[in-house]
Image (cartoon, rainbow, N blue to C red; front, top):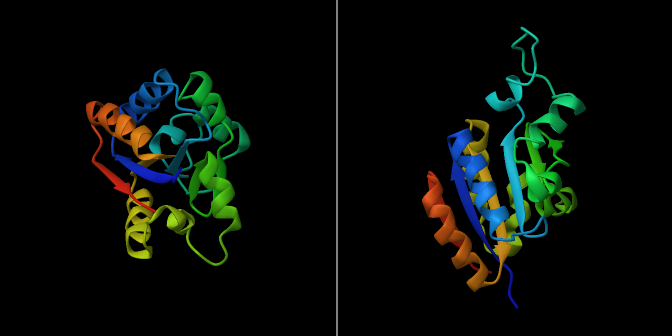
Amino acid sequence: MTSNCLIAEFNNEQDFRTAIEVLEKAHFTEDEVSTVKHADDESLSELDAAEDTTPVSPSSEKTAAASTLAGGTLGAALGSMTLMGPLLVAGPIFGMAAGAVGGGLLGAVESWGVDDRVAESYEAKVRNGARLLIITGDDIRLADAESMLKTTGPTSLETFQR
């Protein structure tokens, strides 16, 4: 089976959380779903009572607390958010990005048919506050995810074929 990907972009934290819950209820697993957020995401700053607004790498407590926002089984899997540059990454894309030589974070998704220009566009969107859900799987699984995610208010939904 060919593994393709669906990238769902969210500009609203509540819609992003709802989308994660929808995928979880549909039995999507941590092997199928990755998340990408900016390290300075407002939902992370809400977790920190410090008044200093200087962007810094979030503490491990802040990162762990942010991961609990998702809740449930998928949320626990996404709880291993790791700082990569200015982005917090969770899920299978992290391993791919860590193995990508000299490329940007989303350059790791090239194997799913995402070209450099599109990857750079998504990276810029995340730097500007967007949150991404990246779902991988076969065409049927991605069609199911797309159908469900349309109801959660994504800014964009885009499928990439290998």
